[in-house]
Amino acid sequence: MDSAIQPRTARRGDVPVLIEAKSAVDATSTNKRRKEEARKYSQLKAEFGSDVKYIMLLCGYFEAGYLGGY
Image (cartoon, rainbow, N blue to C red; front, side):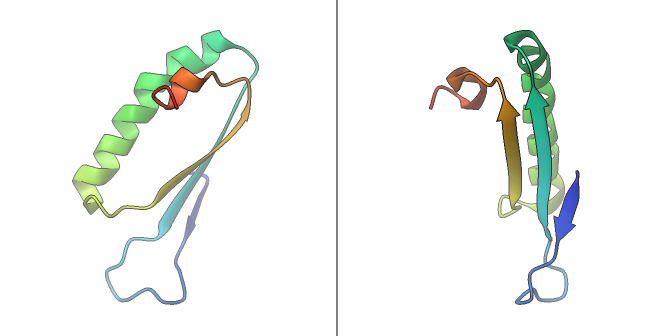
């Protein structure tokens, strides 16, 4: 994670918003990381529950398929 921000309205035990920044210059580097990022998100959900807030800032060359075709 690049940053963890605890909202002002958070209660004791709330998980902070987790932010990660990613950049890529070509499709090869994004394809290698795609499974890694999916595994990381699955681990976060397993650890903190399905309400975990995970934000990825994507910069550079990312095809639509990187986000599941959207």
